[in-house]
Image 1 (cartoon, rainbow, N blue to C red):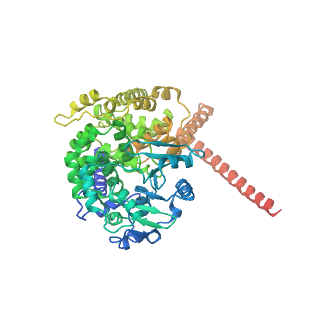
Image 2 (image 1 turned 90 degrees about the vertical axis):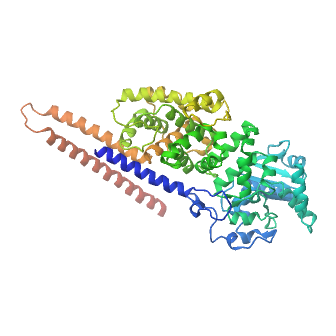
Image 3 (image 1 turned 180 degrees about the horizontal axis):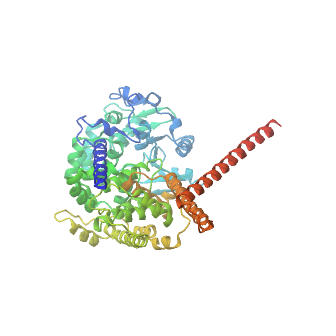
Length: 596
């Protein structure tokens, strides 16, 4: 009965934490100014400091502002961006930072990337850089020049690249054209109106310390509101991908939708089916790999887009959310832990969130014993089967309860049976990736959710199958060979972004372990392993001591055990003192050398 009580208390605590997390990530989609204040202050920092210069300055009636008065300085720009800006400036062209990077810098966040716009045409831009740095012009409708330098990609666009819009858009722009506007300002205004959202329409000239704002984007940043430059229905009809970008920006920055955007998404949601699969994959990766996976999926669910993009996950969240609340589900807990280790500064990669999705789908399809799931995750994390099983048995006594993914942890599982079931689970996970890459497999899986809509859309590329096969493949070999395992428990983000199999395997294991048992600490693991080794040594010494005793000796095993352990403890303390003395002697020697 005590075990059942502990499980219930653990489950209750988990759900209370989930309710707090749900309140923390809650969104308001209607721009009434009633957004939940807690959603602005996520664990990764406040998006707009109440004491910031931007918050105190009246920006509504001004189109040109001193960036320094808003807390934006040229020193905040990346070195690679500075090289491009200075190079263009030296050739007599005007160059500005534009879009989301300006927005993020004002919010004191590191931009995901830097976009530059210049008065030079794209051929002139390419000519400027191609001898020193690789550069290429890409895109048809929205052509840009991509410059590769210092392990960074800088996208450069040109004012001369005019993008034709719809008749409705041209009529709207003609009516909004400023009556008194200098020619240079008119160029900037025209380009700003071709952007997607007001918060992305800002220009920053770091040479003159000026920010240009023609659509009150600064005001929307201050009020944490997302608005389109032109009517939302026209904007989303012109480019359906803007619907996904709206979700991405709102989720990452905790912005509220204007009424117009909310209405347009509702009316045009199915237009996302016209977006290319590669573009959808790119937008989803931006949502899930940069520290906002949980709020992104939650927002997609609430505006009705998740059932189009990821129908299985939408049906799962709908069904489980009715029972426990959306953020209490295992899927949302996995995404929450993914967000804890991802950010724009240190993003993960699509292989990680796809791996978590298929891991989770396998458990929904065939629920598993918690020890089996934790042992597989621990093996991915440590890379050593003996260490994985030892740590799993220590930590899995009172796991978080998830339904339907985890079975009731009742019967004992031997090490041999555990190894077999872990291998079977790894195979099941590899097979589950077809649900994300094959429409027929998706429809078959959706039979588990009768009545749920299924668009049949799959956008995860088929080559992801081979990657998942590498991540979860060879588990039987890891178990049989009992390899040395991982030596460093710090995430190598450079390797992670390059889809390194070992790094992705390690991160996926870490996230699953933290989801099931809340804590993964390799130092605790090392200490428990040390205690385990010490116990084996004590038992070995005890055995030797007992064998050396005369047959008629009446000393009990307990007395021998106590004496052996005391002797070992004494030797351990002597070794520690000797080590400490060596360090002191070395320090004194170093001081003597320094004096000389």
